[in-house]
Length: 504
Image 1 (cartoon, rainbow, N blue to C red):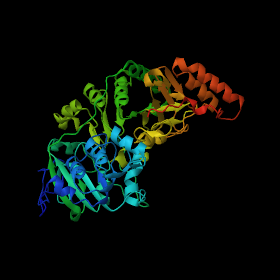
Image 2: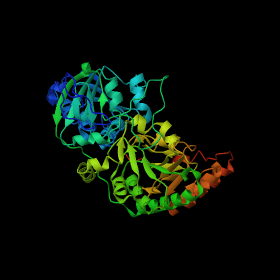
Image 3: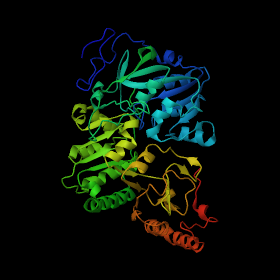
Image 4: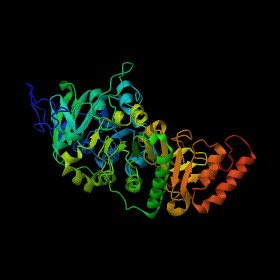
């Protein structure tokens, strides 16, 4: 790299690892001094996705400060407690987009103490840049982002990219936390492509899920850089629960379905490009792929998050590679990747979330999307976010991006909740995130309901067959009562919502 007059040049695709973590004459500050730069009323754009790669010390200092703030907090996805616990408990968070990942922020949204607005991940960068969140973005816009290295006009993200490029570009001022707890060699996995503005937006220049378009650096106007804070605090990453017998049964059913689909669906003639939702079930479902015979087809992960199960598949040679926006790993998974970044970087690439989740790429690569849900109704409408239709449990995340745009949309979920007392196959869901038009296949531990080409009445019959046996008679009785009233999509509206629960 050729040094610039103000410090080392930004790393590039050909030379990705920065020469130094702190390049050039930078405004080094304590977390408290950096927090003092955030006005009382402001929009805080924070990095982070999948619980990793988020700023830690500056949000913590904001929560501890004496000043009372009214902050709109916008992240890429899930972040840590320093943001979604501390800023809520301190009363500084007034609004939150697009995810409530923990009990504290979730309770505050459901109680109305913070105003929460759920958004599709693929659209969020543009909504921040072009005024789509205008009603909630108040005051000065300050980006607070984590990096493994920073220069006067560039930074290299840490364990996630998320919407960092868009947020840094849209902000009035930028605060960077440089985290020494994460290896600077993470630069090798980053591929930052910033999309043009409409109406002159060019196609994303990728013809391979694992292709690269640029280098690891997020560039910005040097006049925006307000503070650089040094930290060595690790992420608070995922803790995957133990795989249950139900998870294993769902995984077995999914694997059997995919094996049959490989033989009959020309979508898989040349390759298999798969996406799994984040979380314990998604991580468990990845394990099912090890037993699927994909033949000579290359198998790639094209989604949002790299989880521990993908590292297992890479190590076993079952996966060509993974394209995502976040390394949403357990503590053990992070250590495993950090210890061998250069090797994993040959097969793993992280992109901005508006690229990893772009409808254009999901369609281009013929992605098969596998996501979970709170419940599915008898006609295939999917509720992924709200218990009882009212109480948010997370946010739609990228599930909608893949459900709508993938070539085969699969929803995998246990058939019951609350220890088996509540059916997750219901007559009519009171909240819909993915409509019946986007859910092609439903998988439970009791089987597979292939809804493609089926009428509403046929879908209802197929879904009853994969419900828990203890609820099938009642679901059939509902279906028959509804059919007596007629209609293309029959419902008995007087009793449709009697199955709903309130876990408050």
